[in-house]
Image (cartoon, rainbow, N blue to C red; front, side):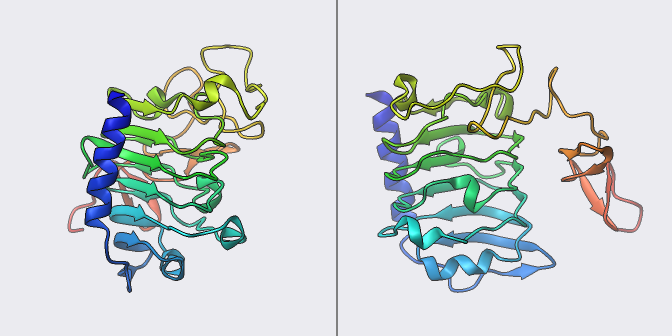
Amino acid sequence: MASTTLIWIILTVLQLGCTMHVNEVYQYHGFCLDVLINQMTALQKLDNCTVILGDLKLQLQRTRPRDFVNISFPKLKEVTGCVAIYGASGLESVGGLFPNLMRVRGNTLINNYALIISNMPRLREIGLANLLKVDRGGVIIWPGPLTCYVHSVDWRAIAPNARHVLSGIDVYNPCKTLPCSCTDNSTTNFCWNNRKCQRFLEGPEAERCNPECVGCLKRDGSICSLCRYYTYRNKCLNTCPNGT
């Protein structure tokens, strides 16, 4: 009951704050400012966004699964604020929309939560297979009756030291999902679906990357997927060079 009340309060706050859709998304060399979208036609504004400086909020009512066919934003890797996706009635996979989202910094939060996915009746999976880190804030996953692979993800590894509110739907496995088969170790055997294992930033299963990286290429740990601290001339650094 407490979790349901919390979800209702947060959804009310989101809906009150999201009555207008974005006509323009400010974009400069892959950096975009706050994105608030509640119409499908506005999604195209995300095409060139690699980092969103601020929040990403999507409320897409009255949509169907076919509306999202061939709609994807693989360039987006990081959001510095919070991510809230709710009421996207036709969306079946969040990962299909944002396949390379790796980091949510949580510089701004909604009731202490940085990642909120809720009220999506056709959602079959979260599917954010490249998500490695939520720096600050908790996670709410409360999508719909068809959603599987919610509890097969180690959310504590992604967002440590924060509260997580997770739907209990797939505990009873109504979708007959296959169990994870990523490792033989039950403490690290986590997956996003039966094809995508969870990636880890820290711990025994962490990727062997350069310390300046958040994720890296398997064949070369010095090639970062995303910079942990600063980017300068396409290189990842832990401090900014003098005069920059």
